[in-house]
Image 1 (cartoon, rainbow, N blue to C red):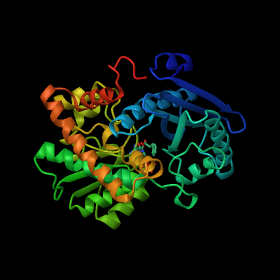
Image 2: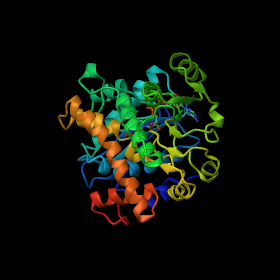
Image 3: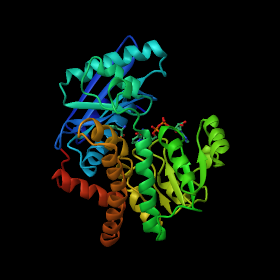
Length: 356
Ligand code: NAI
Ligand code: PHE
């Protein structure tokens, strides 16, 4: 291991990193502000146990950069950022409150240059607690005046993205009879599995939590897949909805699907993997395009004054954006990831050398 804070930050192309350590709870807090070109740096807060604190910083830096292109592609008047709470172990309720309060004070001290939202292991009730001391927060619970859980909207956006992907790969957006494997049955994947079942797909499910798999098998009639066997399982569409980094070189060589289209952030272990996917004939839905539903939900409803009809229209737009990217990628013989990055850079007005 031995990742070095200074080296990580030096190699990063973002604007500012704020690092804080709460000694009472032994929590490292990283606020990574990648870009304010289109508006304040915005992105969820991830609470996680990492092998070492610097791995949390590395995660935050990568995720913040992805938020910059996600916001640009979603047409949001916001930049990209991410908060990471690197904890020694998942906290009990009292410790969690202490961590969230200290973090709220840290975000408040940045004066609105970073706006936060939920991410892995943080919820709308954590956002409601942040809002007691800090106004710079999206997706508080509905009871606290926010727009609440964004996961169902993210799942709807992914469903539109899967339809666009099958349209491009197989010539039809009809999902009936297609084998679609959902990896991760949490807030997004669990809802997506339901939507896919309603759409007539043959749904396969995998999760490291066996209870979630059992529930999907019982309630949806889904077929269970061992979490360790996801990559090599024969299916039409793989929808990664768990963790990042699932697509490395070995995984791409093992895949037995024609489409990868799911919600997880940073699915590619490194950007060059996108080319390998293309060369293997696997259509890849760039994660930062297909998973924008959470942002559209939180920002659209709370900041842009959308009603539900407008939100649903924008969620459908995720499919249209993907179709455009797929056509442009084919025309230019580029990977879908590079094509989407290029489109994002155009919106950001940068040439790629500098994302700020
Ligand atoms: P979640 O924490 O509710 O669910 C994640 C699920 O994945 C859990 O059931 C967990 O047991 C499972 N899991 C973890 N490691 C796994 C593995 N190796 N194999 C199979 N299953 C595994 O998270 P949520 O909110 O559903 O998000 C899923 C992904 O989508 C995350 O990567 C998140 O960053 C991303 N995302 C979520 C958005 C949202 O609105 N919630 C918005 C955009 C992206
Ligand atoms: N966790 C969300 C994502 O990764 C971040 C987010 C949600 C940001 C809602 C703003 C509003 O997309």
